Structures are given as structure tokens and as C-alpha cells.
Image (cartoon, rainbow, N blue to C red; front, side, top):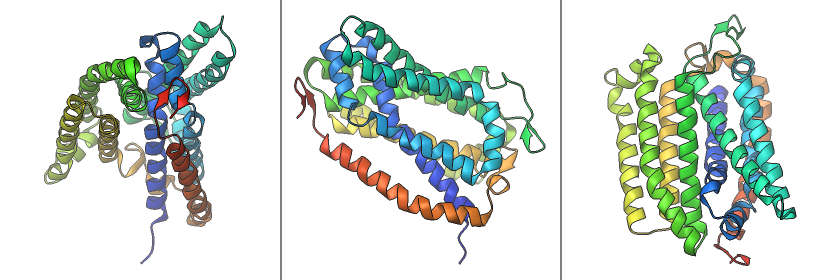
Length: 333
């Protein structure tokens, strides 16, 4: 039986993107929550909670972008010009937060400035990621084998909605992460924020989900045509189940489960995104197979990916295992 390398690479890129959401989402969320934390001890502990892992999390972003360029070059050539502005904004945000992360520990007088930079960079990176998603979902104009739209086509009410949704969702991940990794007043504050951000995240999921089918008739058909609706209806049902479990564990004052279940909300909505766009690399314009690199190139790259991805997973898991404890006054314990 032959293996469809295009589907294999689509799965690998989907995995890389979701791994980035899982691993970088919570540390961007911590930055988004920064203004709500007390200057000094609370902000220092929040940053210490992500210090061992934050810079390695972006490995998956590089893998996703590089994999798209290598495995689906036509999709890369069409999509990147369409979303240059939010992508550049995202990269600038990541640069600002990275510099702020290092510099705020080396100053006392300018620490408030770097706190603002850390918050601003986190907010900009998260919002830009959501805007990029919305811009792609709403459709990209294709002319021949190139992008045929304008420089500002990415900007729309829908892309702004998805940008806000990602910011709120990442903030929820950040709050549940701090609830899991900290103690005392900071943990209490994080739990309070999670109680607010949980309903806000569900509201955003609902708003984006309701708006998406109206972007394109194909989206509506994939979600609501019979008998496919029997399968797609499981997505909102799973959202409700995961949300109910999230609030129950929050009420029980659990520490680990609210974080895992907030990740579960992202996993279910990510599956819903797959329902909307599959089998297209550029929604309703270019399929995965039309955008794919030659099979020989895909096979060559797959060998490297099958070696590197387990290594990345291994050292990432080891880092999280080593720093699995809570953050106290004297660091991890």
C-alpha cells in the first residue's frame, strides 16, 4: 500500500502548529497577563515559571514555517505575501518580548519599561497570530500561481475577531499555567483570572465559529450538509464537554487539570479549523496536492523530519520534566 506523502506532511505541519500553540501559547499568555500582576515579586515569579522553556517553544514555529516552505512551496508563495504585515508584526513582537525577558533582569531603574515591552511584545505576537489565521480563513485572492490581492486585504472585522480570540485564549492558558506553577497570592490571582477568561474564551470560540460558515459557502457545506453534520456536530459537543470539565476542576481548585483542559479547548477548536479548510492548503483555491512539492523532495525531507522531531520532543519533554515543580521565592522546587 502506497503512502500519500502529501497527507503525511500535512499532518506533520498540523502537529508542529498545534505544538507551537500548546507550548508558546501559555508563555505568551503570561506576558499578556503581566499588567494584572503586582510589580516586583509576582512578575518575577511569573517570568521564572516560563524561564526554562520559553525560548525553546518557538522551535515549533520555525518547524511549521520552514516545513510549509519546503513541503508546500506554492501555498507558501501565495499565503506569505497575503499576510506579510501581520507576520512581520508577530516577529517584531517576539523580538521585543525576547529582549525584554533578558534585559529586565539586568536593571532596576528601567525594569518598568521592559515590563511594558514584555507585555506589548506578547500581546502583539498573539494578536498577529490570530489576525493571520483570520486572514487566511476569510480567503486569499489567487491570480495564476501567485497572490493576486492587495496589501491590506488581511485586515477585516473577521481577522480582528480572530486576533482578539487568540489573545483571550492565550491569556487563559497563561492564567491556568500560573495556577499550576505558582503558590500563594500569585496562584490565587491566576485562578481568579482563569475564572474570568474561561467564559470569555468560550464566547470568542462561539463568535468565531458562528462567523466562519458565513465567510464562504464551502465552509457552510462542510459543516452543515447531511450526513457530514453527524460528524462535525461532535466538535461543538466536545467543546461543551471540555468546558464543563474545565469549570468543574476550577471549582474543585485543581491545579493541573484546568491547564490541560484549556489546552483541550484549543485542540478541539484546532480540529474544527481542520474541518473548515481540509483538503485545501489555500482555502477553496489550492488543494494540498496542488501545492505540494515533488514526492522525491517530500520523501527526502521526511527522513530528516523523522530523525529531528523525536529529538526535539525528547529534549523538550526532558526540560519540562526537570522543571516540573512550582516556582517559589528561591526558584523551582
